[in-house]
Image (cartoon, rainbow, N blue to C red; front, side):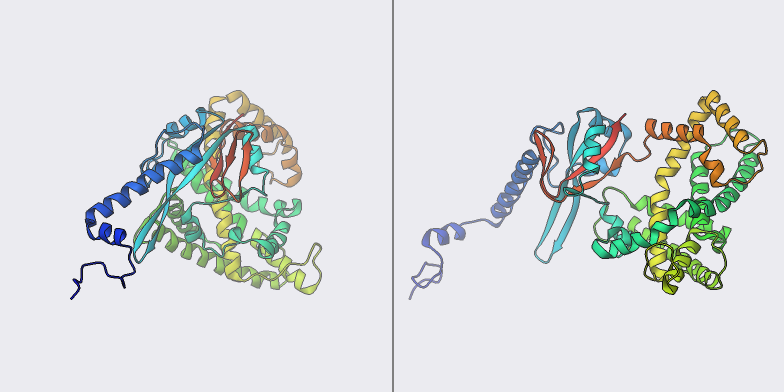
Length: 423
């Protein structure tokens, strides 16, 4: 009788392979596989890195994971100053499989000059905007910013009318009311001495955005609540996050916050539909959009016809507007205030311009004609944005091989990101 452990003619295994596998220790197999994975991780990094400045070796499997958890400006600055192009490998995500866990690192190429940043931004055939992975979970994959093709075009057609000169003039009244209220509050709370001002600018920026979007359909209490909830969304939008939405994690709290914010936007949309249905004049961005929808349905729309958007779609759109208008604008406002405090001569010129465009009446309501005459103020804003770009990194993802320079080609899937361009 043949031994069950011996190779037989009916065995599908080659004798050599059978003897080789029979003598293998499970730990040897595991360690060998791990060693191969670690070596391949470094080889892949070197292939992508080529001659770019950056770490000689990357931390196995997770890249600069720990640096991305606690980023510092000096860390970013060192990349910026290392050359026109530099690179870093960052833990991106992992996929769970019944038999294995697959980790992935995202290779990021950083561009730090005007020319390269402009080339990336003006190359839609090679690159597309991308957001951190948590962004899709928080904003929802169905949000219009993630749509392509006709679905995205339909939104763009519907939103174009919200940013005409006439429409922008409608929003000024709501914005000025927010600022007047904030100025009185700041004068009151600063009577006894100076206070940190960045958080106050963030709060007034949220209030201004919400009044612009929803007008009086949002109460002061709702604004405070949305401001608190939006902070949870900001905290969760980190470069690196746990890929699974665990209860009570940052992303989980952000998703709950998104649900509450969108619910309030949907309620505002219902009120706006009722008001615009009666033929009243719009007083906010939501009114203007819904009025355009009604006019399009009746065939009286001045521009191209637009489809009717649901309250849920309207809420998701204004959530994306809130997302786009907060952190960068709050940062710019903070730097602007500090620069004006440091340069009283510039501040005085702005004040004199305000007196001139208001005909000496500082309580005169602002309109678009007055705004267009504020040339020095506009130059000051542009100079602050030049000196202190409020967005440190604009991430894009390569859709195909992208010759970003004559001696470096960004491979498909890599993120060529414009970072702190030098002016």
